[in-house]
Length: 244
Image 1 (cartoon, rainbow, N blue to C red):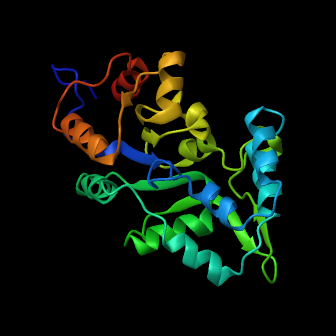
Image 2 (image 1 turned 45 degrees about the vertical axis):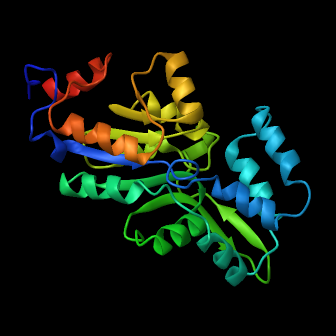
């Protein structure tokens, strides 16, 4: 399938796309995992965070240890999570994708229970979520499992975004993200909308991307691309997929 003369994908291309969307700091206005830990974790969670930031442990080990320090009943935790806010522009972005038959999947190295609570309150509970599983362990205790981790420890993250994106059914992936958990998959995605640390990483690594400030910005850029505006520079891997 060739590109149109202006370098944009043809009008039928959206049916080939899928969107992988990060949650914490991307859809949510703040890192919801950090907010939960700040509110409910016993002392020591910040030391575990520092070990992860220093590279001494992976994010999966980090979160397992931090979740073990949470002290909150399910009702109390859910009530707190329901008060966390999303980017006001995300519903419009989701609607744009729906109009163009681009399925969205939230793929996060955060906590599934928190994500689903926030999304349900926003009226967006129908969007699939793939994340670490936060499970009640009795009373006010919790445990973390990671059903989407890479097999045999090939990736230190609780959620291996590259593995998930590769397993989704459509050939072209749009990534929207903001942080370290998105670094690996950014190099594999066909179109990247990046903010925060991910935008910095993409610049340093030479990964073609659109730097965005929020989902209103992302929606404007995606709408222009779908309408036939030129693709970002250095997208040879995307052109190979389209032409192949």
